[in-house]
Length: 427
Picture: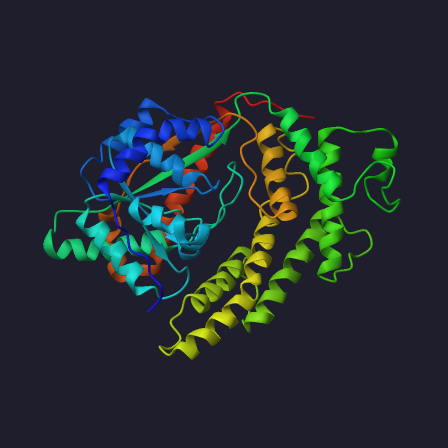
């Protein structure tokens, strides 16, 4: 059996945390506020008392706190599914809090029977709505989505089968939600400060740039715009990683070509270490998921009952945990590409790229660069009864259709929120 961590919902503790949540969001998260339109809140509250799986995009590590704040606005308590490894953070203290707040673990990609059973039971009983992030990874950008995993739809359909046995007229709803992190005030000074720290860490200054550097001409001409400095930092980091992974860029290769080649090299390195054959033609994010699932499955597996067997397993698991860093690095370079900033030069996009570069260089997640406003929209609830008949005969097709609907709704909401706000641009 995998090392499952069940939910240990503690009502008085949840109520206390909700009470202090505004203070935590202000002082602990640098004045982060949540903004939900009355129409979106009304759509959600129409599901009061009904079974529902909430599926938000996962752009930021503070998404759970934002969803917890949203639960306070709705007057409901939610359960949450979280990756097994986060329960070990802070020497297990993080896991204690998560479990008592109503979270439980899942080992991604594994046959985590206890987790699947808990999900079906929670959805079937419907005492609380359940939050699951269908991207499965923190994308660190909130303009677009990573391809969604199909687990949200699959688990919901299985829970629906359980419900129909006892209550033929009841159903489950899947609620797509969009979270968009914005900086309503100018954070240009914070971005320049972050760039300065990265330049210092990477040993960059305008007088020591290698003449082969693709940005050398612009720097020699005295260009010191935020955009040029960001690209120069990215170029230097790319050079370092190419050397680390023994990649020689082809003559005339663009930055995007080089990043593509580096990603493939990282994934092949991990696949070789884990003895996994990657499927030809599959998307790179699918490769990441396969490899991460293999890691999770091995690390949290129960390999015997004797103390010696456990000791050997723990030693081997510790040796391969370094692969997580490689996979995080690959994900860092999947969603960001050369031109990501210049095609829409908002300060949020600069921050997205800097978040990834700082995660790579400093080895820790950066904090908010200023006061943030998180825009929340709620999509049209998907009634699984509408797909129940097709699921009986064509399970994969029904799951794919529901997953596509979730993806389409979240993508549209993110686009609409961007179109209806007034961003601050940097050059």
